[in-house]
Amino acid sequence: MKKDKYGKVYLKEKDLIKKLQSMDINGTGSGEDPFVVDDPFQLPESIIIKESTLYINFINQEFQGLGLSRSQNIKFENCSLEILDINQSSRIQASNCTIKNLIFTGGYNNDFNNCEIGDVPLNILSYNNRFTNCKISDDAKAILLKEGGSFSLDFIPQILRLMVLILGISFLSSIVTSLFGIWDWISVIVFGGSLIGVSALYLYLRKVLTSPQEKPKNQIINERKLENN
Image (tube, rainbow, N blue to C red; front, side):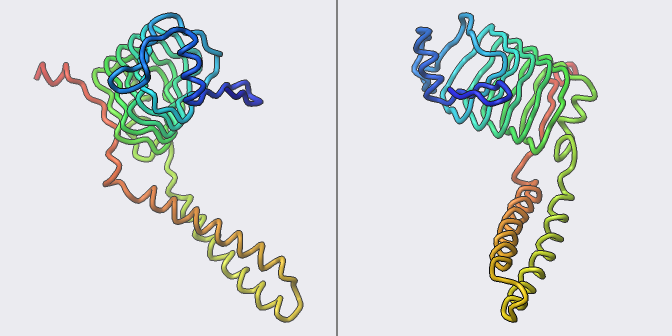
C-alpha cells in the first residue's frame, strides 16, 4: 500500500488480497469464485486500485473517491460513488449504482446498467463503453459520445511532427558544426536524444488517434424505449 503527496492511497493486487483476507471476505478472486464484498468496506477517502485483475464484486458499498488504474474484472452493485475515475481499465461493471462524477482516461469495454450518472468532468480516449438504461444528463451524454472525449487531441501529432522537423534540422546542424569545432558533441547527443524521444511519441499518438475502426464509440442504449416502439 502506497500513499502519494496528495493523500491518494494506491492498492495493488497483493495489497487488495491482504485487505480482503483480513476481512474474511468470501472468494478467491477468480472468475469462478470472485471476492464478494457485501459488508461495510472501510477505505481511505481517496483510493486507487492499481494493476489488479482480481474478480471483485462490491455490493451496497459507499465510496468517496475511487480510481481504477489498469485494472479489470471489478463489479459494483447498488453502490454509491462520489467519484469513479477509470484509467486504462476494462471489464468494469456497474449495476443500479449512483455515480456523481464519472471520469474516463482511456477506459474501454466497460458496462453500466440502470445507473444514475451525474457529471462527466473528463473523458479522454475512452471507447466501447456501454450505458444501458442509465439516467444521464444531456451534457454528460454529449461528453461521453463525443469522439476523442472531452476535447480533441488531433492537434498534438501536428505539433510533434513540427518538433520532429525542427529537432531533425538541429541534429544535423549540430553534427556539422561539431565537425568544425564550433559546437561540442554534447549538443549532438542532446538533439539526437530529443529527436528520438519526440519521434517515438509522435508515432505512438498517430497510431492511437488514427485507428477508429479498432475502437468502437461509446454507446448509450435505452432498451425500455426500444421495447415501447
